Amino acid sequence: MIPPGDLVAGRSMRHRTPDQVLGPYFPQERARVEQSDLTGADGIAQGEIIEVTGRILDRNGDPVSGARLTIWQANAFGRYRHPGDTSGLPLDPNFLGNAEFRSGNDGGYRIKTVKPGAYPAGPDWVRPPHIHFEIVGRFERLITQLYFPDEPLNATDRLLNSVLRPDLLIATVVSPRYRISHRVMNFDIVILRG
Ligand SMILES: [Fe+2]
Image (cartoon, rainbow, N blue to C red; front, side):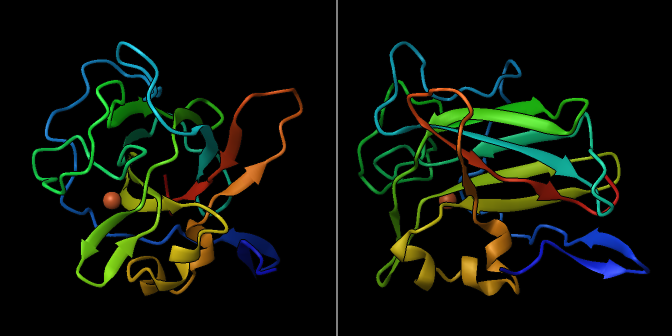
């Protein structure tokens, strides 16, 4: 397994999470309230409910608290809640397509959402399931995407494979210590200074 960082002067330095393009579906309006549950407007969103947990870290592995996170993603059918998505795939009235919140004192965050569907991005390109992230710290801004493990479409995705370390963009499955009805994924995000 490739280590998450390099030893520099005897100290483990983490790799910055690779950048990914913003894409055409960045939310047009800021969320009215900070919250990180996308699964229910008036009912329960369709698809596989998942949680994504992780921490925002700096290069030294120290937590970055108070970073502002914006996330956006397609629904379970592969459709964005965005006027620019004219794919004709089904909308889900109960799925909130984006959310905003801040990392906690330990740099941690937790999202409740559905696993996004794959969607066509061109005549010969289907994007694998992914979640878009924007992280705004005090010093820097990172735009990236989370991918899911064991997805056949990952192998041919142009954006995922445009970075030197695609493995750093793939979430890992967490084994919950308590009985839980849905999968929990982990995705730590490294920015350089915080
Ligand atoms: Fe996307």
